[in-house]
Length: 360
Image (tube, rainbow, N blue to C red):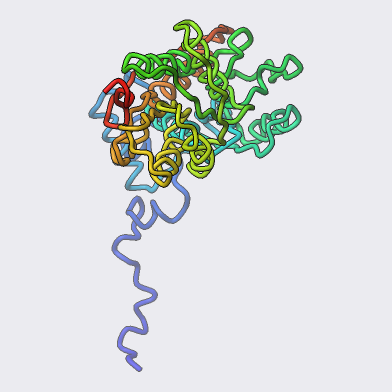
């Protein structure tokens, strides 16, 4: 065994002198430590760590460098209690499997991060009043500043449901603008544009593959489909029903393919349109020569369908941005504004729609 350095344990290390790095890291650094190292006041350190404006850029860099050297981490919980703000937005949603909800959630998280807020997600399996109350209670325990509810089902339209009055709430995808701040896509406008496009191509009528009955968006699109046909004096075919999935679109498509008078179908979302395309092809119907198909959402894959899918584009990023903007405005100004903001849609024409066989 090497014993040449047995006495070295009594020799002070060069970096252990007072004020050296070893001393700085020997205990948890405080705000006062950062202030001393940076040569500023503790108040300036506090302003930098809280992101306040008005701090000289050179001073800010000195403080950040001192924080890094000392390994200082601001106590976010203490700051939240002091300022009365947790910089966190809660999101309640009932279905994480649908494209609309997932893309809206992604947009909310992105917009919140740009504003310096985190997002706490709370999925609710069963959309009942008790579950909503429980979700708000759990979000309260998780310390959030406000809540965005992605409410695809009709629960908020029920007069018996009451969200906590002390919580700032913005709702996405609902028909409750008389009681809450609501942000939604122009569902009706998009559906009408889809039906009009098919009628303008020369189709006598348009069949509809609708979403689930409990869905607000599905109901809006179905109502607009029927209204557009009625106003044009065209027959209204019976509604086919799916659950947003491609598989449900396939099952409904097998039934629609058996109808020789079906030359155009408006599907309430792109996934069901995908299943519909498969069913029509399996039954020997050529798209768009025999049947035109149009979807709703304009998912990223829609242009890669076979054939590329004509669809209605939803601006999910704008819906998410407006939800965050609305909830922050309510937080900062305590505005109890109600009403619905509609985000416009646009028709994206691709190769899945054409004039009907007789029209050609």
